[in-house]
Image (cartoon, rainbow, N blue to C red):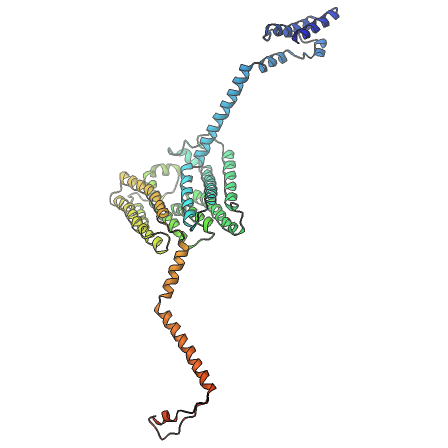
Amino acid sequence: MWRNSASFSLKLLSSNPNPKPSLLHSLNGVIRPLSHGHIYSSIPSTPPSPDSLKLGFHKSDVIRSFATVTDPSSLASASLSKARDVVVAAQHYGRCYWELSKARLSMLVVATSGTGFVLGSGNAIDFAGLCWTCVGTMMVAASANSLNQVFEIKNDAKMKRTMHRPLPSGRLTIPHAVTWASSVGVAGTALLAMQAPMARLLQANMLAAGLAASNLVLYAFVYTPLKQIHPVNTWVGAVVGAIPPLLGWAAASGQVSLNGMILPAALYFWQIPHFMALAYLCRTDYATGGFRMFSLADASGVRTALVALRNCLYLIPLGFLAYDWGITSGWFCLESSLLAGAISATAFTFYLDRTTKNARRMFHASLLYLPVFMSGLLFHRLPDNQKCLAEDRSERIVKLPSSEILLQEVENVDSWKNVQHSAVGSQARPPVAFASVAPFPFLPAPSYAYP
């Protein structure tokens, strides 16, 4: 075929009595590589003639591009370079999103939400609902943490612990981070709201979605700016951390009940010693960043240690309440008390000797307390705690002696009324003999009138 095309080109040249040099060079540049198996690299310096344009040879760059496209090695290298660029970009943005979302902290939030879901499930656990709840919670937590870093970009740039985050280091732009946070926040809330098709569970999911959205607003738009205004931000942050397990309970049971408050209460009281230890260890860094932490106004550390110790002591009765309310068995009461006593001991040691070593020991104890406490809740939980609590209350009501006496009195009154009605039906004479026995026999006998 190539030979035929070449002979056709020679015929065109022979038919033209005065062939132009540019046409000859153009044809030579095409015919030679076809005969030798490679692309001829010499390109004429003169512009192409109209005759060559008629034949389809527009410019010399067409030949170069044709040579590049038809080379298999160049195609392979181009594909490899593009794939390498895609992999590098994916790794870059994945690392940035991981750090922007504070993925480890978000996974801790997901663990508390999942534990609340299991505790509120009763006998049967909906594993599909559990997965959707965890995914939605993860997305909302990632959105809240991302917005937190957007608002604190200037403060993070001043602190050694946070200056290498994606926004202060310039690896991501603020509009990019805001778009990411908004997207995952809306998607996570919608996922929590629409995870079940049944109308009965839709209301429960809307409750869970409302808790998630309110927690996002509370963390990003209340807690975050409050960190630069007043030390009360620690207690507001404790409320934020206590909502996810309540979210999981609401997603499973469809309501917010007293039984579901055990784990949120534990998280609230646990966060105070946890953050007090962290604020004491990083007080210089927090002061450089412009954050108003409780430890900065306490040079001696006495008040910081007392606040941590007091909230550790609040953790002790939670195990007994979980047992008394029918959530767990009696073994959890003992285990929880021992666990709370251990973290209280580290807080008391920090109160006696306020050193960095003791503060770090209390911080590590707080890191150990939460997973062990949640594992104990899951291991010792009663399958249907709400039913057990209701049955226990009903048994207590039945066993009250006052209720039995009341029932007997009601029965006696009913029987007396029946006797009176039966006496009206029969004509009984007045009890004269009984009247004569009275203390005053000279009085006339009384007359009895029955209604």
